[in-house]
Length: 215
Image (cartoon, rainbow, N blue to C red; front, side):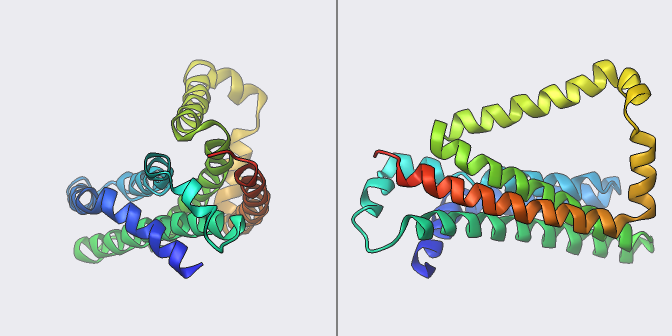
């Protein structure tokens, strides 16, 4: 398992070693100059898509066929990918927290608790998306899975932009936002429970698809 995890991390670092440094510098500067926490969270979204890119390397190098000859289980192969994605997202979240905290210290700002909660919620949501992406990518390919997620996001945001007023009249958005502000940690632990359940389901689904996949 450790060897498989090193393989995943080495592949990702080979792909994005220069990009990661560039992203860190750019978003670090933007966080300080704009004083906008949006870039704390957007960096986590970038890491979300980076973390699953190893599947492209696997397809290009024929790793799946080679892995079938190794004394490792399909669960170990899939599990290493899940752990690598988790570590990448964790790195993005820790970087955002570090730069956000440093900016607040330098500028003597407040809002540390709000920033911490927002970063955690964003990282958990992105992690859930990654878990959903894996079985889709194993089944239909990485590009189709990414495009599918992108289309879903566009439909969601497009729906809010086009029909936002009607949706506000039907759905209790104001009550939900008030509830989140009033009970943030309850929502956090609820999302964590959904995440854990989604992780387990997506992991076993990914293992099943990967086990039946022909290379």
